[in-house]
Amino acid sequence: MFKFITAAILALACATGFAATDVNKASQAELESVKGIGPSMATRILDARQTAPFTNWGDLQSRVKGVGDGNARKFSADGLTVNGSAYAASDAPAPKAKAKSKAKSEKGSSRKKAEAQPAA
Image (cartoon, rainbow, N blue to C red; front, side, top):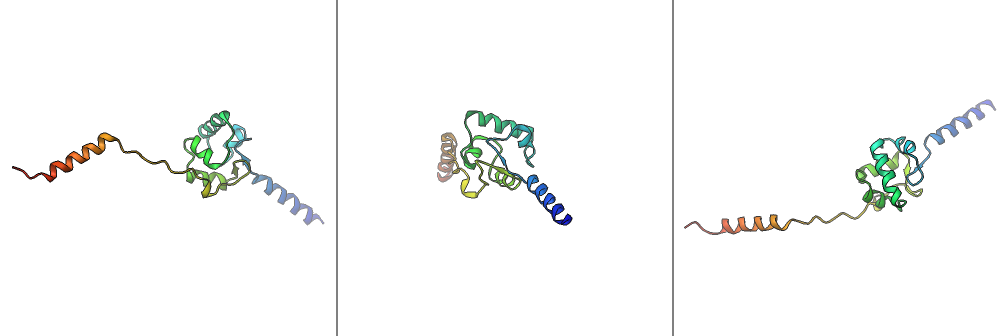
């Protein structure tokens, strides 16, 4: 009987040690308790959350600088959730299309024209 009670207490202690921390409800200290989230990251999360609660992991990633795919995976593995959901790769925001500057592309095309013309 004593072993059963001791096992139950240890199991409860382990379960509370791995309790999930929801990004929409957590305080600064609770966010900092997640491995990888320091004071500056916790502050950025809280500042972004003042605008509106995070709807999903993609929303968190798009609104908080420093939370990319890799960090989202790590934070989720260490107990961070968004609305009770763990991170899944499908939650990542769509990649932003990079626009080349017009000046750079014109510079490159004029160089190609100069190389194509034979020297007189």
